[in-house]
Length: 312
Image (cartoon, rainbow, N blue to C red):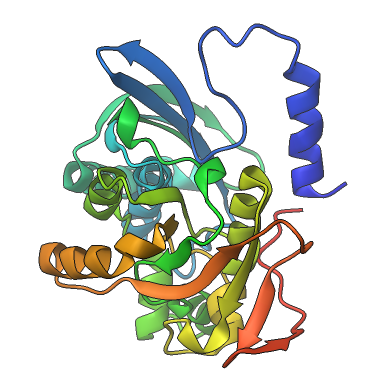
């Protein structure tokens, strides 16, 4: 069973239960309306030693900050602002004490940067590597929530930053080069908190999510949820590494979003004025007549065997 096949089976198994007001499985966050035109956003992510991080290649503070950052990235991807987190830790005996204290310093520093309070959690001993589980909570105006299911035919597909450095950094780390610029990018992801909040307030922005598994996987989620197709212009992918690394590697934690083509130029201008950075057009949303992403190289269709990261 694939990861997403497993998730679909969970969705079906729980589909007959009362939702109690929640919009559940299917987006970066679950959504719970609280009245007054606002909703709470809930997301949860887990990091396992030797799968998501290596203690030999990252400091405890970096691992703590990354644990927080990859979770609040999901809040940003829905157009919300993080307000709180819950943290559960399964620690090996050698991580209790100094390592755990440094981890918490990194977690606190990242929490301060994004304005999220730690409100609870759990700790336990682990017999087989450190396990970190974070639940992040955000808040968003109902009209600003960006869902994967809101892409429209004709939309421009954007990303809001350079891609592939994290994937290249992981390769560096696995080859023993832990002090390269790309390795530092991989160890220190930056959630697009203010950018996501601003994009959430733009009516011309339709669907949005963060890039955790690579464009080759994450754009498929938007396509499936919205019932649309998409083409990507490979020569437009913003990267300083190979295009394959940029679209397949994942863990960039930039924002992938679609926008009304009539407003795209104005959106680009205003984003640049607000953040001093560019957003990048990489493709277009098309009709639902293709089974996967159509990859184009200067207008010519190509067929690379590109797939994003799979957890299973």
